[in-house]
Length: 406
Image 1 (spheres, rainbow, N blue to C red):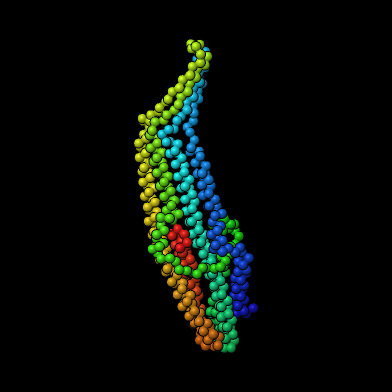
Image 2 (cartoon, helix red, strand yellow):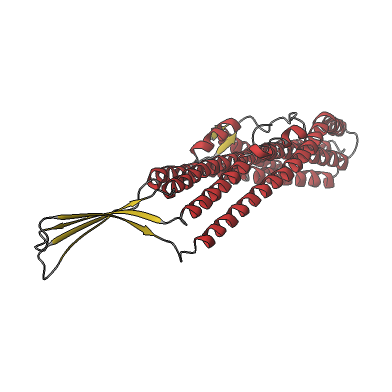
């Protein structure tokens, strides 16, 4: 086979391989962004958080249990008698109520943390879905580029046969076609990694290919920054931090209640005591004084933990505010760039590349100009894809920082 035909066959094989990859993609499981987000509630991370909520829920009734009743039975060697003593604790100083408040606060914190986890998972899923859509868009672009370069190689061969192109131009066109085919194959194979990342987040088999149905979303308008910043206190992360502070506040109450004496009701019965005219019964109260229990130190430690939790809540809100402003600025920048590229740059670049190629087809101009125009067009299209993807990721970050859809 002549060298030029071999090169053209190689380019065509690369294009067909790319198309085969595309065919496999079509057979892959199509998943829209909304479907991926809906799967967050069924993902392993959500199930783990839900299990923690269930455990915290079971701890609430357990926290209301009274202390154990002490029952003792005794007899004497020289006196034939039987003594039975029951000591019933009386939690009259709020210890059970304090325990219940801690358990309820921990349940609320578990629920808040589950919500914050799902909110963060939605951002991660959106990012992974956008990266998959970006990889697919780049692969499709590479396939189109490979087809264009293959066509250019054919045009160059036709011009050589008519004596209007040199051998060097044919070799350069063939090299460009082979390079484009290799790039298309590499970009197509990169989709599998992005698909596996998304599948792991939504609880699917990572070895089963996914396809980002719908492609990269259009960058839409978002509310003003001032209105988004007003949502900081209602952010799931801020609410989870506030719930953790409530847990520490409940522990302060628990520590205070533990400083009170422990009261018990004692009931004693003596049976068959020969020294008594009959059975004898006694009722008494026992007061346990926590004189050396270091209750004050425990309370101080609880109060310090509460202060740390409140400081963490303030830090969380401040960090969210910074991430919100940064994500808003990134989104505006990427959205502006994407619109400029789509509306102004790409149409001009496509027209320039098509005119240069058509002129070359008609025997005017040189190959270098066509290759340069094609490279410039590809660079602009890759930049446009990147800007759209960056805008989508920045919007996902903005949605996360705002606490919900802006």
